[in-house]
Image (cartoon, rainbow, N blue to C red):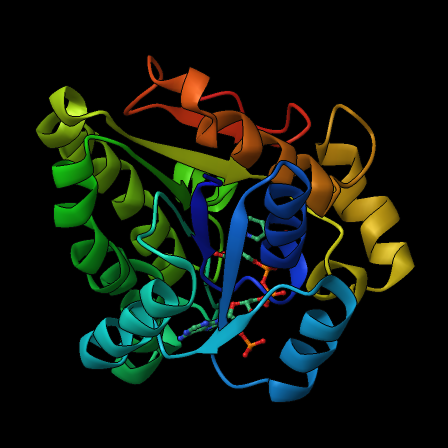
Length: 241
Ligand code: NDP
């Protein structure tokens, strides 16, 4: 029986690449999204991967959404907590709403998406939980106190959850991507990219979403059971923690 994987924010950007790669690797994949129906339906038509609309910052919505995933595909074996947002602004100008939106979507979602699946994983004696953090949660970034705090929080969450579930066949790991060539980064003017961003990346280029997806497939494998509580940097050498 194919294992079931749920990718939050799995219809666009890095998440879409993760969904596609897991499908190619033989998983039954469900992709979650927030509100961009057009992108989600295009993704579904292109890939055949079913999509599930719910807000990862809302516990009730997640519980309902997760039930729909289980009814459609079966219990979740692999959870990829990928959905994330930015609301960049210097802290001395940041509103509590800008802080709170990012913390709810990027950090509260660790509870809302993981809590509904963890008991089943423990009962079945198998689970792979993979959290998509960021280089900026490791090294900090101007204008991202909210984002850096939330993304750094994933690391502590992963280590504690890994300890609690290590004896139950469940691994919990973090991937910390650097600059990836998604729509967001490609929108940066080419001159800024060339003079300000690429010189910081020893590999000399942006990462590809598929390169993050490859790391997810590696950690999701049944054979990856000895790797837990780890943070895997995929940043072209930009920051070595
Ligand atoms: P995108 O903005 O391209 O895609 C985000 C996805 O998350 C979309 O599917 C979106 O749904 C979904 N999403 C956003 N908010 C919610 C929510 N509240 N509930 C459910 N789904 C939600 O993001 P990226 O691919 O750029 O980033 C993916 C992850 O990787 C994020 O956690 C990000 O922080 C992290 N990351 C990205 C880097 C980069 O260079 N791009 C670098 C380092 C880390 P919808 O389409 O409906 O809006």
